[in-house]
Image (cartoon, rainbow, N blue to C red; front, side, top):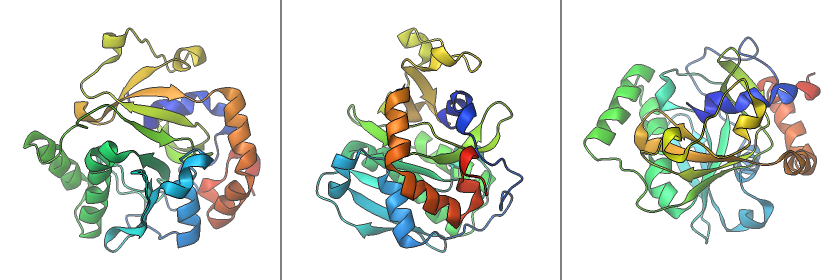
Length: 250
């Protein structure tokens, strides 16, 4: 199960544009305005943590570059290349932040994938390369427990019911759980049953080392996040229509 697939199922009421809008099949990434990308990346964190976080911005010609050095070990970016999908799209937008141990492990993989794509590596070759690096231990699972924040008001990724690209609001937390399965924790997530995704479940993102325990943010808190981030949502929608939620369509 992939969180970038599964979380959309409980966001039907806020799903926005599907793959037919925007540059869904483009292979060259459009660079976001730096200030907007910074705000989007930091929105993955609770407000009280944002001032201490480092921010990486994407230069599609080179990869991610440090834009702001933080003080608390947290690091944020907007993921634009998901290596396990083997699809060089230009309409992936996933704001997320890692703690120090996650930045050393998972964030490094995301940044390397972006750099390899910038160098011209195909999506299929990129997927093979990342898998090989896990096999030869260039990449390793996080060395201790930790978590990634994904409490942004919106992200754009593949999702049910058709496994196409959707823009959705689904804030959640991801706890590192390498090699753990849903069977190990007795979880039984079902894409067709809303309530089964409200409790922790395991999401394997491409490879067992990239498995997470997912905890969705509650409905009341999600509503507050949407209200608090109304300006960001409007600016993202104005920047590119594929980032508009359903009730913001122009």
